Image (cartoon, rainbow, N blue to C red):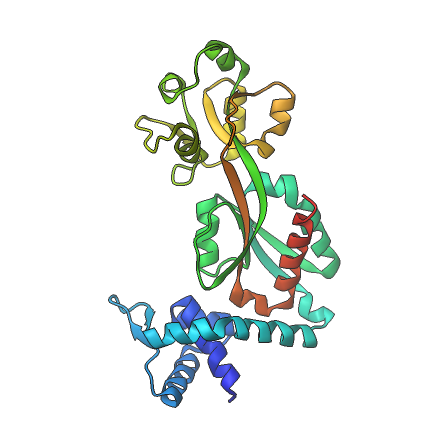
Length: 298
């Protein structure tokens, strides 16, 4: 068995944190994975992994960290070159699992998804919140994810694909009631607040950057669906902070109004994430590249 096979297995185990996940990604049995890691450890004369405290996962040793930092990029590059050289139309066909928010997918992603059908790629789209999508790609359930939440992870590749201004907005009747008064957190405390997903919401970011206030100590209405928040706002229920690109139509039709226009508005950044191990499949690379190509037009 080649050194490359051992090293690829090592990188997969390192990124996934367990033999179980690595075996699924490499389509090998756990004993085979364990044997390859043991062989590599014997050749190096160094231990690469230890069981963590609960015995359910693996913790890399310092040697493993150094080896992964030195090798990961090269292993990924070799795999891409190898896969491209042997790819055929049959290799491209199959299913790609993508996660992302409904509103952004609707507004921006349809052309990219439509182009995949030409290659007989079946797209399974998981519509969910930023936090949930981020969890799913970390767990290797998704091949790619479109999300505003991103935490550095050696197993996840990423690219910024879109940025949008965050706006403080409400229905016309609230704008009229607040007319002439300075828009402050104290004034807004008199208006019901609508929040998109409590653990990941735009209001905290807006308050921190515009009002220099980190805490919002009062009850909120939390909804994990942007379209519901849009409808509630248009019905005059209260105020919220949302990406401007998601409410352009409501603003143009006068259904919603921006309450405050700071000189440096907060920005929401959308990322495309991909599971590096899933890039071993040509269809996943093609899908990622199609999305990145479409994003250049925005």
